[in-house]
Length: 151
Image (cartoon, rainbow, N blue to C red; front, side):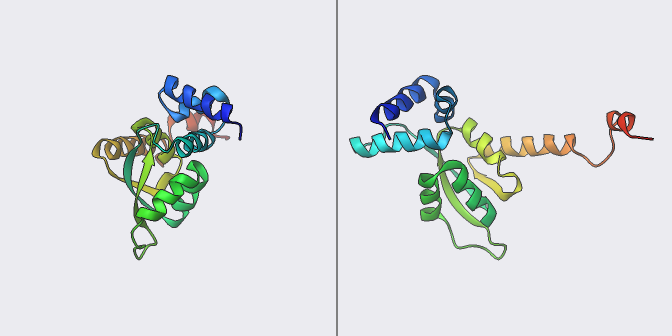
């Protein structure tokens, strides 16, 4: 990977306030930005961005998908902090992620394969989103659907 690409990712992340914003600006995935920043951090021997952590409970499928979505650095952090699997196969782990906004968006992609345990504000935000989605997709037929039904 070109060192210039790493610096571009660094500058865009600084300007945009997140790795996700940098990825969007550069037209690449967020894991690619994370990898580029990690390469710079490795080269300079210091952490360039403050990352916060989120404590979550993950199913086996959730752990697998989280690795695909957020890359090997996050997978390593989850693996190093994961508890032993419970009788359902779920583990509790710490996930380093850049912001509550980013965590909310990424964790929603995991659907019911993740439960946010901490921080409380993120857990509450996830709960509100899940409740809103439940209302939107409730089983009862809506008037719009009835109008469109063949018959």
